[in-house]
Image: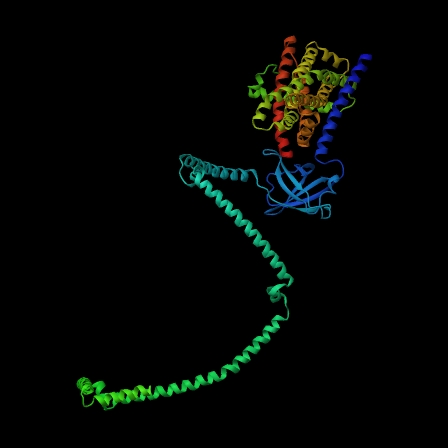
Length: 339
Length: 260
């Protein structure tokens, strides 16, 4: 009988231990799924759940604070993810907190990450819908990584080529590296550049100072910019100039108009004279139109010139003649006296 | 009645055996709801099945957890997923390894024990003597044993899971410097009710199958002492086979309800 009781006690201990272990396991698993303790709901709306399932963890600032309670279709392209969160984080989640779907590591479970808001917003209420943003899924990341790898391959190939050229001394860069004169020139250029920069800085300061004075209304430019009476003065001046110009230019314009009329009359007379010359039969018309008459006239003029020359010779001969010599001397004396 | 394993390859014998086992199970359900229940014998059988199997199940579970972690750890390290070891080991042990290994051990230890015990009682006509004395041998021998195995196996599975997880923790702690709190945080962070409840429920069915087959084979043993050995042997083989069939069904059903 004693043995039977002992066995029963052992059995009782065994059963109790088994049930206790099972209860502990249920408690911890339930605790992880937020079945116990105070909790509240939050929702977010996404276009792609990225494999998220009910029961997946929800993290706030990297700490597991809840789980996904439900995933509901809002329409054909929108899903609402309902989350069950621990009450203790309620004070920290603000209205501008942002939810995103990510993974626990590269190959881990899909989770919802809630990023803290700015802190200026009021805290999120029960059932509040917070904003969400889409993150790159692993496939997209791998695609990007693939194209990046291609680019790196091209870059490394080019880099290899550049290195080769550098080693062989081709191009400008090896020249810069190896040529001592070039280095001195570059140093000098840099020095000049530094000086230019300093000068530019000084100028900039002066300009800044000048701008400051201008902004205070100092100097001519400052006066021009800031004096409020100047526009009115300029307007008055313009009005006066306008009236003055009109008064001063009126006689000139009238004279010009008169001259223009005289010129027109002269032009008409000239035109009439030209027409008369063209149509008439006087000496001028004959000379202009009749070539033979013109030649005759030219001959006459030639003969006249020749006759005049000969007459001059005769007169010169007369000056030297003893009969008229005295007379010409007398004329010269009178002329000199007169001058 | 077949006492060998020929019925597995013989279609007619297979259905004949299946029908007899079903009738035996139906008789169990009729008798179990009919009071009075043999409580003292039930407690005794619970002690034998549960408590006396604890050491064997515990040692096996511990070694399984330890070996499983040692074997899978290098592969996980190759994938850079060392941090997922607690999650992987816990899910594997809780979902499958714990229940099936414990059930197989119990099929070997308890199934054969029940088969041999009842078989020897049968061939020595003790069961007939009980009937003559006015005691219901089915209720006293079969119902108590099947109930005991059905009730004790889930507890043994929980023990085996716990010890197995500790075995795995030992490896993680020694090789990966994982602390106790971190290990069990990760374990419970990854185990969900979809892992825990189905595995516990199927343990009841495993226990029922082991008890049923052991009792059936022992209760119907024939041909003297040779028949006792055959009953014990066939009980273990059929129970083991049935465990895998039940496990398959359990996984399929769990997949429907929990979307694994």
